Length: 151
Image (cartoon, rainbow, N blue to C red; front, top):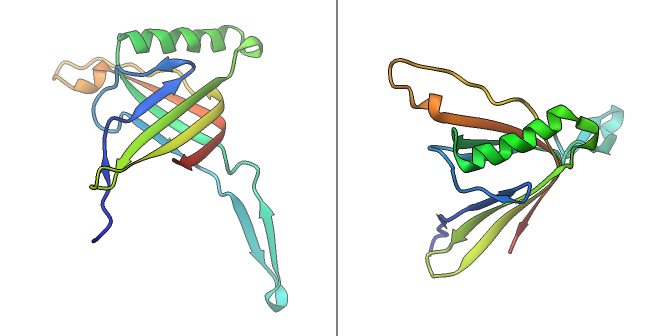
């Protein structure tokens, strides 16, 4: 039988907040912008390998309903970072993607995020033609360490 993947009921916790006021589309995306290691090949086929300490850094985007309780709570944390960066308590989080195999078995694909900061402010716009993006608050985070585990 071919492998299948059924996903749904994902959960996200950032800064102790269980996020529920998500918007449409890709409401949460976690990416790694850096290589885990680098390779350089030299003369006679010699090779040099080096671990890249930036490899585990994760970049996350979160799309929330603008003005929702989650938006208000995260904005409060963002303002704390802006007002006194040195005393800001770094964000931790967990993203759990539930994956089913079609036979009733579930695997949790877990991203443990630590050492997080708000990367940018939340953009805003107004539109007279019904653009729904004006009702979305886009948060951007960067985490010093993101580890993935399957359970």
